[in-house]
Amino acid sequence: MQRHRPDFLLFFLILCLVGGGLTMVYSASSVTAVTLYGQASYFFVRQCIWAGLGFILLFLFMKQTAQGLRRLTKPLFLLSLLLLVMVAIPHVGTSVNGARRWLDLGPINLQPSELASLAVILYSAYLLDKSQHHLMEFRRAVMPPLVIAFLVFMLIMLEPDLGTGMIIMGTVFSLLFLAGTPLRYLAALIATGGLGIGLLILFEPYRLARLTVFLNPWKDAHGDGYQMIQAFYAFASGGWFGRGLGYGIGKYLWLPESHTDFIFAVIAEELGAIGAIALVTLFALYVWRGLWISLHVPDRFLSLTAGGITAMIGLSTFINLGAVTGILPVTGVPLPFISYGGSSLLIKLAASGMLLNISRYTRTGEVPEAAYTSPGPSRRPASG
Image 1 (tube, one colour):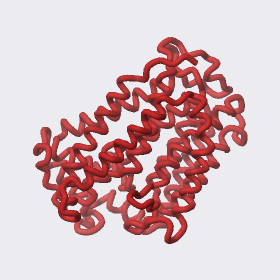
Image 2 (cartoon, helix red, strand yellow; image 1 turned 45 degrees about the horizontal axis):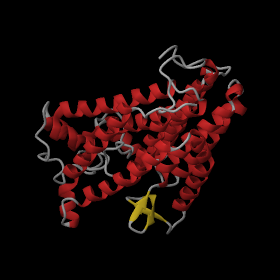
Image 3 (cartoon, helix red, strand yellow; image 1 turned 180 degrees about the vertical axis):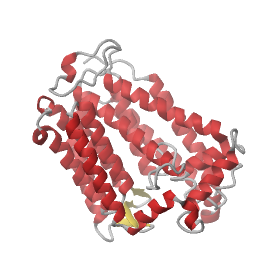
Image 4 (cartoon, helix red, strand yellow; image 1 turned 30 degrees about the vertical axis):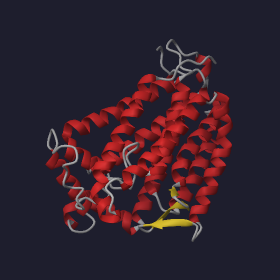
């Protein structure tokens, strides 16, 4: 396949998201940083370091060949499994707020579930590419990616981390859809997955409490509902144009997790509805560009990989924004590129580098039918 320059618009969107994220991390974390560490830029400096490392990975993956990405699938998946198993081992995985999700690597903490999210995308795309002529056969085409996704899901649930687990399963479902899996299989998977998530919520008290808070946060305004109510106050305080960058009051220890999972509430308070809508627009453009790349590359593996990366970013954004605005229960999913968190930023930038790499193989004309040949329904564009 012939390569050309990477997608400039996508690269520009990534720069805007990361730049905006660093700005808001400094603003949202400064009070907490001074309180805990006596230095307003404590979290900001660390996030900048992660961003620098992330951009190094972005450029490395952007320069990779298509065959190089294929060769990464199995080693990356096996590495992610090893790290997830290590996290589950007592005294090896680091526990924070009752969840053991991190590996302590000296000066840094690594969250293996973030790496696993990307590894599952690559390996699932590889398997679906190999089985493109057998999509009508559940056992040969649909079962393999489901098995690896479920294996990773169960390891992540040992931490536990339902939010990341849901993103992984949702991403694999998106890959199955893009691959042309028969709709009857997809409908059965939706029903089974919905039932499973419902049971996981019902049989875990803290998840059930989160669901109760989601339905009525005012019922426990000084307990489990406190964070959600403070987020509502932040949205109301911001109005249309915001209180001004750096002038929010929610971050003054009123809003828990103001620089991590609930940073969008700080954005809405300081930059107003206009700023919040602008950020959502950037994410929407990222997803649109990612889908365009997925549908215009004449290679099934690369097409599915691009679609999976786009789905991962889109689902993470939707779940985070839904939780912060009260549309969905809180699951602890960070906002991609924006929330403070090194592992998330590192992996999202690495994945974006892969997406930029794939954009170099796109064709603006009609994509050859052979690139999407399968017995399932065609989901490719008719023309560029």
